[in-house]
Image (tube, rainbow over all chains, first blue to last red; front, side, top):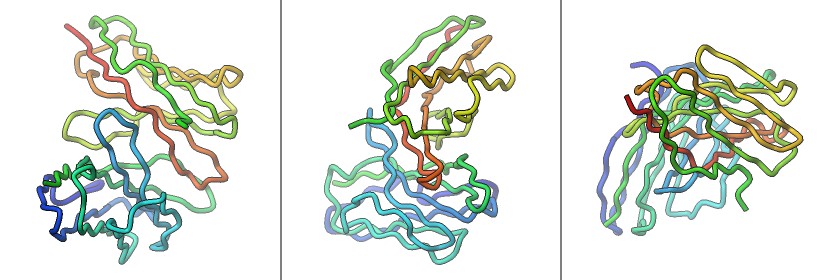
Length: 115
Length: 113
């Protein structure tokens, strides 16, 4: 596997379900991100992890719970979601450190539908 | 308040001609700008970037221009090819924000043969 992978690619869940999205990066990066893309809207940053530590929570509701066990893996745990949470969820990674680089590399996304 | 705006949701261009995609921003503290391309069912892929100390960066058929006084950047694709048909997002960042990217809404480019 190369780049950034995400599983599952598609997910349909009911409002009472609990599910998790998984992201894995094979680029040796130390920063990982979750974005949400709703139809006709810009990508919205949800969470940022640098060296496994959460450094940004962009006012995301608690029904979204991120987890970063190591610098290569990122999860987004979902519970009691609402239909308006249906969107494309994108994971990205980048290298950050003394010399900041801004290029983020994205996975293919998980298309989530909440029924 | 949207800090990065792409006011054209779509653009249609003939193959071989120039495609010009525009992006405006409001935050004068942004110091790095990027363009991403996105095909359906795929994540955005990095295309080209420019630092605020430059006004032009070129990579093959792609050139990004930055006009800091107007808070405007544009992406030129010459010549346009049908494979360039995709959604293009501009993004901006500030060093002090640790590389956090603010994205525009995207412009869907269609290059017709």
